[in-house]
Length: 283
Image 1: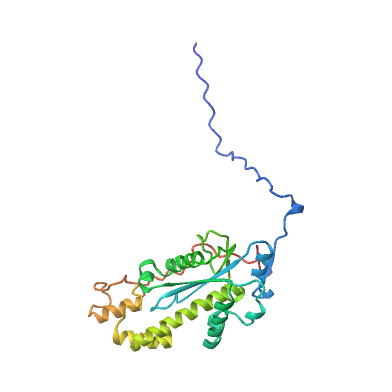
Image 2: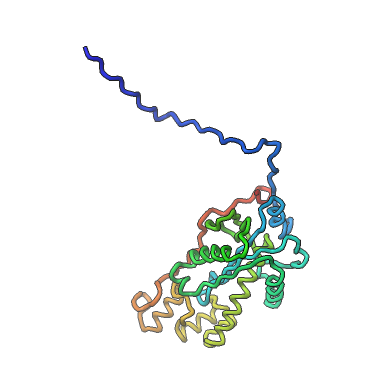
């Protein structure tokens, strides 16, 4: 009688592979303690903590014009000197500053910052890519435009990949981190100046007043004059005004140069970083 070859028994589906614990690089007694940065500690604490842990220079990144239906999207990256906190007393989110205070901080930042980079993204590129994608790409370009590669990048609100450096999403970053607030001022003032220049070229839209955002004054100008070359045709109100100007029914997408509908992708690429129960962030 010929013996039948013995077949290997199939692996039990209930058995799970044993996961080995990663090797410890440092024994517990030599590991640095985890830093907890609380929002109440001040806008320079996060940057100072990162520097103290050898992760500087720290770049803050922010944008201006994401919600506007006309004009460019402007993104800025800024690295502040670690010991300049007293010189920047009162620096906060650019939207909370008066125009005069923004201009003053803009001059101070451009004079005192260790490094900065400002990227202007024209409306046509915003239409082609979508607002959120154009914003993310602008952030990467702004960081890449810094003269010295930062050791760490802080973004406002949502996480961004692709910097080639560690990055942290800071909830309300322009209120919590001075370098992000500085980036917001650079972006806001640069964009406002561009919109004032456009107001001189296209006075019928009153860009100097509303800076391209969707206000009743701007909507009335769109209804009367139709959109211009600096409007974003991916915004539904601009697309509708373009149809009316061409005599096309609002429900008919034909005849519009840009995509119809609101291409306003505001969602984050990654989940936001959760804060600790004590109101701080762990690094």
